[in-house]
Length: 105
Image (cartoon, rainbow, N blue to C red; front, side, top):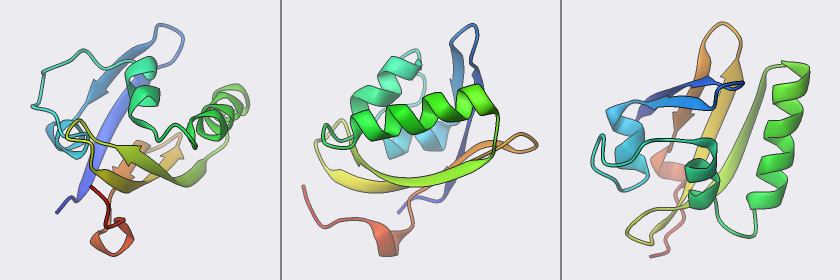
């Protein structure tokens, strides 16, 4: 269903750009919202939100590459798993492999 998507993030200014595919992953029409960190956290499953925020804050502070898999609740209320990889050279890459999507929703 979903492939790779990209987001670019100017952390100090909280300016975020999402690819059209990332909007679709969240169940949104491309360009339908202005992406922010707060928007992103709002789509993270409530039970995962605190740990995801802590991991991200650590990555923002130490600038080290990282990856994670988290539950996301789309705009249509379907729950999916999202894999994110952050590296300085490539930016943030997100994917939702079909084999890792929960069957909820």
